[in-house]
Length: 429
Image 1 (cartoon, rainbow, N blue to C red):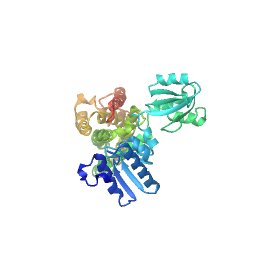
Image 2: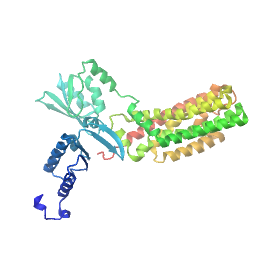
Image 3: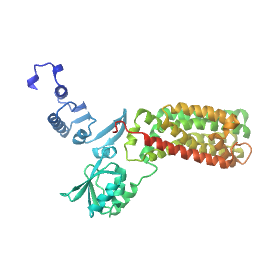
């Protein structure tokens, strides 16, 4: 840049100013280099020169950390990639691992077979592929796959396939080998994904939300201890407290926190894009999050209900067990309802709390006409069957309650999956 040394920097082009910034960052020979979009504004020749320089620095044992939204730059330069979405750490690994998570860009494969014509016909007819070319030099088919999970799962079963190689992903093994058959079985779509479950548990049981989840169960147990100390063991008192506080108030509120918290925050801040970009069916995401929400709701509602019941009357007339079963049953329906609410509204927590405190705690307990449409009454019908006495009662028959519980859970889960299907990744074309 000697030709421009007498000019003011403010008169430089964007690429020239970028080169000045790089020079100022390198002049003191750093061992750690932090760069933000270092190739922005540079022409192709300057990009190649800077890439060569950064590679040499890495080979010398120095650390170079740079940000970029251009995947090709990352592929050519980086050994390890960290992905940040909406301010959150979303993924980590080498280029190939990150690339497999990106279902909105085609994956390119080189596929060899014993019958290219039959294989090409099968590939063209399948929606997982977007383009096929015959490579005469390689004696194989070059395939662009838009659905990584479906393509890799179906490939061993297509006609004539003997081996496959992927230019930008891992190499599948021969379908004739036992290891290939095992891998193919593992890649079949499942309705539960452990990675999604782990991320959801981590989000739900974070420090702040865990404190909120634990507050009501702790309050229930403290009140049970106080009531037992003041009034002694009384079956009617135990039934009133477990029905009024535990089942009518605590269980739906915990359901709100767990159900909406399983997916609502991810949709609100945009970090759900990480899940949507993975080769996982969206109904699988919803079902996995539902399982997590149900498990969290059960643990934080049914377990303290059982403990409080034994404290109050030692499970006299099966009151403790009956209300615990009711809490378990209600947890399933509440988790499904509030998970759906988290997918359709940005104010899911507010609407959920209004439903829990007004409809369930007030109308579901006091207004006769509303009781038929109350999850609380449906779960009480199951509890009444367990207790076999008069202390636990419901305005809804057991058969009707069972049908409504199943219907609400299934329909809410299905509709949540449909709503998640309608979400698109930011920047998709």
